[in-house]
Length: 420
Image (tube, rainbow, N blue to C red; front, top):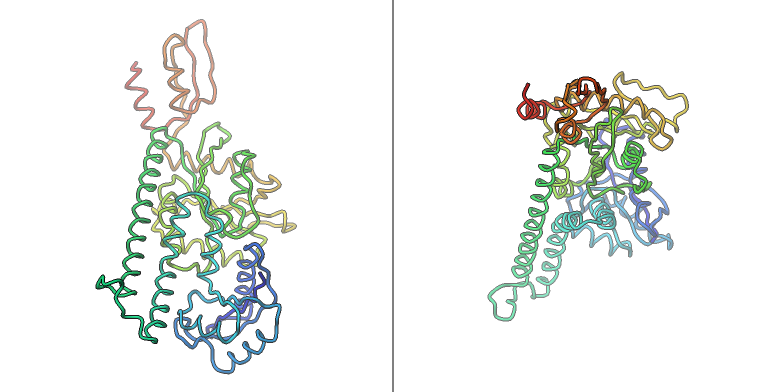
């Protein structure tokens, strides 16, 4: 499918031309994410309030109509506005003779294509409900114009609109109930993870910044297959990896952020992002090769603040500057950031060392050397409940000095089980 991207964005007085160019580039990237879609042409034009029926001025509309009608290769138009009112969409499709998509519809379709787990598909279905309700009202208004909108269905006493509103309400209730069950399952798994005391590290970032590639590099998991497209990761996944001290951590891959991501889509996926809130540490991955990396950083931080993350998570977030291999001679300006190339493995050892220190501080773990008897169960217990780094056996004394990374609660249990 061919698509013409018309960036329907009216810049504020303080906006500069690069702002419009940035939005065009991002709009093109959204289109290219979809199989069979390509961009024929782009235009930057002023718009009125997207929610109004008349989104363009008369002159702009005439110019666009002439352009689109005169381009047979254009089979659809993407207006880079968050949402169009249903009458606006219908009017423009009638004027231009092709389908018209707004940002909400395109992003929702990308989500739909990338949803692989039951939870992701349910969240997409939930996000789709406002669109279905909008179409329903438009269809009923059209029927009402012919005298059909208020008829009762088979003597039920309900009108066409009321029946379908009830069906959509029932559908929403079923989706939310199913999501609640899956959320409870995730909470249970999280509790089991915490009982085993695996630190959880959430990896966040702007979409297509290289989060999945970084997790593959940190864990060595060959089964992870990153994809070079927006929203390639829609389902939250968890992978185990080891830090230099042999401490096992769980890396959680999350959905990518996007500027102007429609609010209802964020709301639908808020349950998924709860994993970030319950993490011990957050890694913010940035694509430093992107010309708008600073704006992307601002978008991600704004979204994280909106999630109301605990203050320590925000204050101690580890910033990873990825794709430095694409920027020759790159040197990070941020003193605490770590520059890496997840694809080539550059900077990973420094990052692992930084993560280890951050995880130990965040989880209250300490490095301790404990003397245990060789004949008792202490050594086996430490292997199971802590991270054993070294064992110095003293056979003549029948003991071993064991260097471990252990949390305060686990150390308390050790002292209680093996006093003396």
